[in-house]
Length: 298
Length: 164
Image 1 (cartoon, rainbow over the protein chains, first blue to last red):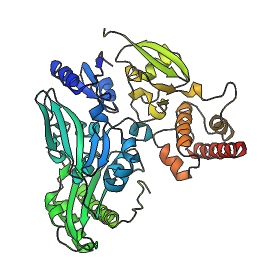
Image 2 (image 1 turned 90 degrees about the vertical axis):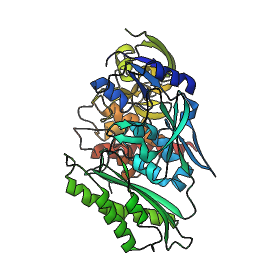
Image 3 (image 1 turned 180 degrees about the vertical axis):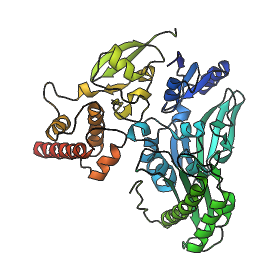
């Protein structure tokens, strides 16, 4: 690895100051599971590394009546183990449990996954479906950006020089809500999504009608995508196979994948429809208080 | 050259200080500076798990940790697993079940198994396979490793039961 300087500030103001001072050649280090590898292979040429794990704001993990505050450096394993996330923000736990193996999950964070802004990132669709809002700190203070607007191209996002992601905030889901994330990979674990789909739904009190829904697609475009036209198809519809199939067909139309070694564009469009159907069904099961018996790879 | 840093850690129960450059990984320092060569480098990018150690009670791939990040950390490596000259249940089970051939992946598998059994003393075969998904072995085909892990778990539960 080339030479680097390392700082581990304990206040946001210090972190922003270091980021600003070194704006041409600086990167934040959270779990490091992508960054350290990219530094070693020369894919990233940063000379100043800012370890953000000692910033208390980035380690917040709090769920309450206002919703969930997820610090950008909280590791996947802590996300998966959190009772309120398992209960109310389940798609986040679904994502956290399939990013790398356990060793990676003990380091990698959802905030880091978001900042890497990969089109196939496993946690971004879940954060989009659950209406996450990014809180960004910079020289001018804090600003907020919805997760679906954060990524702008493969590996690129809205962060400007001197800025860092502090936390992602999620509104508390209404009663009778459920969410799920699932991806397709040709193996059981440890792979990159060919397609990933997340959905969050809210049903009427008797569980018979869709009140709200948000579907998000991964690996079918340059950035993870909020499938708005597919989501609105659900609203006001009875919960049945037809409504779910209509939303899944709309999701397929919104998918604009490329062909690469993991799959052709046609195959990915097909997977988008199938996964959307399955993910919506699982989210409905959870919204009705049921358990989803889905284990990745089985 | 970037200034070297002094890092204070606890490794296998001993307070240990070392000097390192910010660009050095924890794996590099463990092996080359501290001569704790039981931890192996496989892929060097977090895929194979052969460099797995415990950091503050959690298994991590030490090739993806900067040594400077270990300031204040409690580390455990394969050298800290045996009790004196007696192998612990996991090491013994790997031997008895012939769960290794070339042995490069073994320290990582054992560290990951220790973490699994600390969390879940009675794992199912499926849970074992899922927890060890981040460790690769190119010799054994995994069956003997899974059997060794289940056998170690059984033995440890029996010991715990007997101690009651």
